[in-house]
Length: 360
Ligand code: SF4
Image 1 (cartoon, protein in one colour):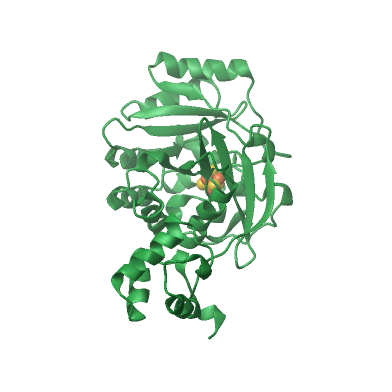
Image 2 (image 1 turned 30 degrees about the horizontal axis):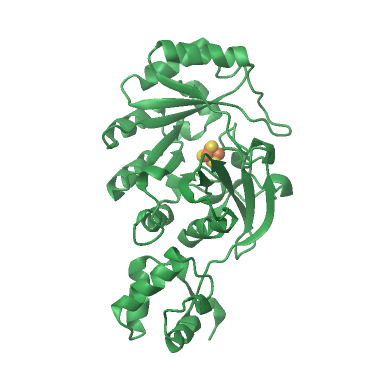
């Protein structure tokens, strides 16, 4: 049989896996065994499915493979313990995840695209342009592979979609992966332990809300005035702040839930008390907590990090306006794996071909 025609199991939905198994003339419970092996036990070869009859495994291996497979091409650890994992996809493109140790558990930061088309100027990934979306299976494989790097006495409990790419521009793969991540039958990450970071694509926010996944949502603002946000985050020219606000007001937060607002502080650009007041006004009728992220510079970056006194002043303005606000010094900076800096790290990925966007 032509190897290329084999189905990659991680790219299929549970329903599609079920259909595949039924088409082989097997009983429905065989599909559940297959799914449990893939996601609960992390089986990586057909030989690992010891609860399946040999004949069934052999027939399966003729039509399907346990993939897509990611090859680890580089791993680097920063002093704070965050580990950047650089993967090669089956088509040779490289992308990254970051495994972050926290108190008593681990968090994995996932990529959803190879590169990103949105070109936020404070983000290193934005410099690369977009090569392509990651598939559902490539998103899930980051989790399955990264689990091997978690010490045996620890657990990977938290997932953040904050790596390369804008998750809400790869919606189908994202929502399918979320279903498997979130389902108690499969990868079983609680919704409260999954969060997603977005620039705020209104159509994507609506689709996420309709999917019913109750996950955390971080919205990257960069500026709360259109002229400045247009400059820093070109997506704002397509969806200005008024549209973003409308989408956020319509988003069905769980009781007690708040949006996290990520605001990267750039020296002399968006770090004045006037900028803080504009941010406060924009957030006035939204339930939020604000993370101020002092810019993490990279070689030849176009911005600098503000000094401590400026950061403190900005924080104070928001605090005095009764916002919940904290300064985040993101982990992984030393390996260029902090938020917005996943760009091929030390290997330096080649510039990718930009792709047309369909944001309608
Ligand atoms: S911040 Fe996010 S959306 Fe903006 S360029 Fe970077 S990866 Fe893309």
